[in-house]
Image (cartoon, rainbow, N blue to C red; front, side, top):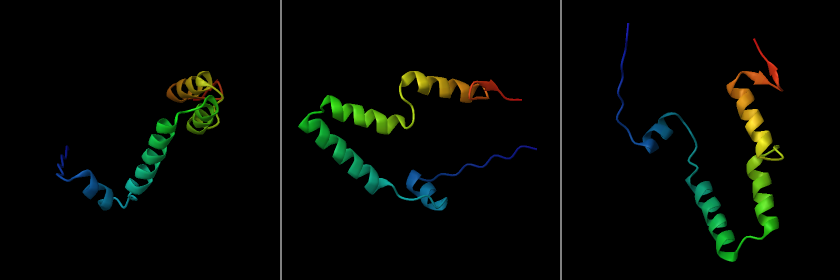
Length: 82
């Protein structure tokens, strides 16, 4: 049996229906901060701090790639899971 349901609603209506928070003010504050940083000019230290924040616990792009490939392949910590 196949059931198909089409719902015509805006993203805002869908967000409210599922009870998700409105992050527009947070997004606006973040964009304003990033715009201010770009206008003032980024120093190497600012860029390094931003990358650390964005990358989380990954010390570099290679660590991020390893984690992503492990997640896609069903591996955790380099070991194959069943």
